[in-house]
Length: 339
Image (cartoon, rainbow, N blue to C red):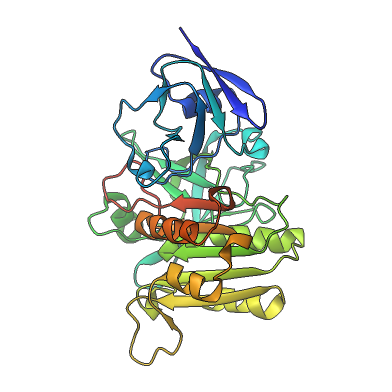
C-alpha cells in the first residue's frame, strides 16, 4: 500500500511505495524536493513534518541533531501514513533529467599541494544540462560512486570542471592524483543536488565555503555574475593555511571587476606573517554581519563547518529557509564522498 505525500505551500501530491524514502518517491515523480548528500548527513533535505508519521529504518539521522521536533529528513524518512510536508520546492531542479554519460579527461592540473582540477569533455554534440551548484558522480567499475561538485557555471559548459581534494586513504582520490591521465574515459551520472541559487530573492548574499567547498560556490558566483545579479555578494573562504587557498587570485579578480562583490579569506591555522582574518569562517561572517537575519546564506564544505555555521547563524536570527547548504563528506570510504 502506497502513501500520499502532500507539500506546502506548492500543493503538490505524490505517492511513496512501502520502504521507499520520501525523497526517492519525489525524485521518481519529478517533485523538486531539496537534497544534497542523500546519506542523512548534510541536512539539505530537511522539511517540516506538518502531518502524518515517518520512521528512519537506516538510522542515519545525524543531520536532525539540534533540529526542531517536527523536522523531517526526507532522504532517510519512510512514511508510516499519508504525510504533509512544509518545504521550499525547487521546480527548476525537478525539470532537469539525470543522465549517465561517458566523459574524457581533457585537463588535469595541480592547483596546490592537495587539490587537482579536472576538466571533462562529454561526447560530441552532448551537453549535461545542470544548475550552478549541483554535482555529478563518477560511476566506478565495482558499482561504487564518488561525487564532486561542478565548479563551472551552466553558461560555460563546453567542459565540466571539478576540484578534487586528496583524502588520506581515499582510494579514488589516490587514483586521480597518482594514476589518472588525460584522455582517460570515465562514466558520470548527473546532475544531482539542489544547492542552487534562489534567484527570486532580493536579499544580499553571503557565500561561506570551507576547503573545496569553494567549487560549487564558484559556480554560483559566476552564474550570479552572468545573470547580472546586483545584490551585494560576499564570499568567505575558510581554510587552515594560506597554501590551502588553491585559486586565490580568482575571487580577488571577481572583487576587482564587480563593485557588488567582496572576498574574505579566513585561516584557522594562519601562517607566520598572515595579516588577514583568523579563526573559524562562520565566526568571521558573524563579526562582519551581526544582522545576518537579513541575508541569504549559502554554505559549502565539511559537515562540521556547515553544522557550526547553521547553528550560529540560526542563533543570530537567520531563518532556516534562508540558509542553503552542501555538506561534503570527506570519509575515504563514504559512498557519498564529495570533493
